[in-house]
Amino acid sequence: MPSSVKKKKDSAKGFAVADVSRKPQQGRSLASLKRMLEAARELMLERGSEEFTLQEVSERGQVSIGSIYLRFESKDNLVRGVIAEALEEQSAEEAALVQRLSAECEDLASFVFEYVEGYAEVLRKHAPLLRLTMIRAEHDPLVAAPGKQYAFRAEEDATRAMLAHADEFGGDDPADHEIKAQSGYHVIFATLARQLSLGSSGEAAHAYDWNQMKRELARMCIAYLRAD
Image (cartoon, rainbow, N blue to C red; front, side, top):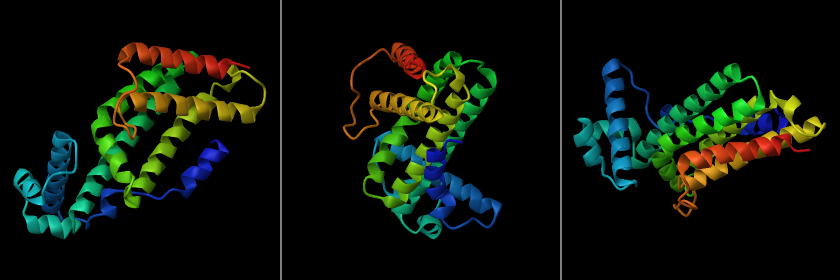
């Protein structure tokens, strides 16, 4: 594991639905919790904002207002719960992608092409809620800190997987290889995030052809990693 990435990961704090809600004691309560989270998530995605009421969650999720307050205490905690669940889902998909490609790809080029393709689609799938997460993270440290944790995890996994092909990297210094792998990941993420309107502006940089952009991004990353 790259030392600098490990340091980041070790300093991050955990985050889960359980951190912002009271733990259900039985199956019926678990089902009720799931309905609350699903209803709130649906409303957030439909409106592209947190502009919903707990009454709407109550009606859509078929749960009482009292149950929502008992479980989460506030709307803010309910929103945090939705975000926690979504981040964990995305992180699991990203980790599974890297694990699969690490086993299947025998060289640097095949890994990078497949990684950019797969990672781009994971981000695109989760982009609507990621936008709301990033907006909230600007003023909510209970979302900002775990958001960074998941970002560090994605960086660590991608960096480690690229370094498995370090014999194809340009240059002879292992320290430079780590920097290259990390920088390669940062360029991939930043480019995809901009195209998916995940930045503070909320707008894509250009109306690029999505599939062409993925191919060219992979080619640029490979060329950079191989350069002396």
